Image 1: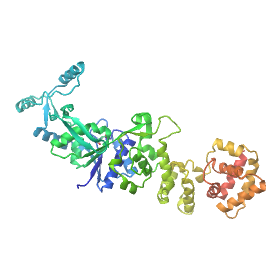
Image 2: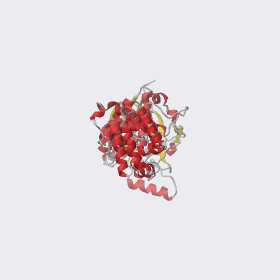
Image 3: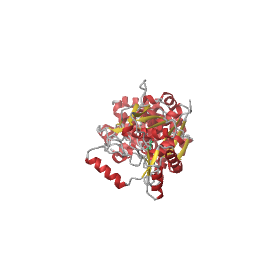
Length: 491
Ligand code: GLU
């Protein structure tokens, strides 16, 4: 069997969105699984809409997701000559012809068809011009486009899509389509097919919106004597209201850059995107890269459109909840040596990093991250919810203050006393803290919950978090005692 070669072929006309990223992921996985080659091709022939910024965003996004390409990036705009040569070849072998019909003539025919409620299709006026007629018109300087000469025969062109199964299109329904404009520029449809041939692509895995192009691309490739690649079209990603996702409608939340900024782990995002439209017989949800490469196949791609469970404008729902829980799960189980650099970058970004975290406080950082991580959803949470571990200026949640510090009047006098009890400890760890607090509750004849909740809020401003004894140990004696006293003074 020949080597598997797949490609991701984005048009750099905007951001890298999650639908495109999913297409890239499926291609990357397929290449890795078959020890093949993943080609990156930038389809930048739309000069007006293509931007350098968008190219950079695509390259950054793919690199961040870990979807490293093996070849490229190739730029479609640099291959104009190859595309034009292919058109010449099609003209030479009789698979294409020059069409001199003017815009006005075509418009009139279209209007006539519309008037009579007929489907408009180019009628083939120039299809059978003699060589002499063509030569004369060219010599006379008449403008022309080049059209593909669709076989006029019964039946249909058919192919086996690896996702959708057999797809058929009647020859009758394919007009003689334009492949070269009058200004000598090839149409995208042609360029893309020729590039697939040039890049020796064996499997075209792309969005379902490419399905309509496929029969014509197969016609072009076959007319050049090339065996077309295998096609697998991926269903679209829609929002909860069944609308196609777009940045205009949904904003940043549909871009890969958003997840990067929000503190997603790249592989968590990949895993989430994977499951938007792919499943295997085991119904498994979590995979390491290696496991997924092993498990992935084109057969598992869903035919129905997938739903990105996000409603624009809902402030409590900053993205699909499944994406968040996937990320939380990865944060809690990632290898500590992989997680720590992510946390470091986040703390640096938010000005909470201390060099001591890599020297005398190294073990402390490790233990603290371990303690926090099972409750956090994003890497950014380490510097927001996690701020009280790394800084003394943190916010107090109003509800937590009301419930845990203000509601019971005894708290105001209990806090300085419990601060004294903790200050007296020679060893400050989970065990000694727990014992000291139990003794304190016995002496004061109070329920542990009262002081435990008060300490939590005094030390972190929050009402939820890790087990209190570990939390206090992580904050450390000095800071705990100071925070307890400060909270009492505030009441
Ligand atoms: N450049 C096309 C796009 O971004 C890709 C089509 C294809 O993969 O063939 O939609």
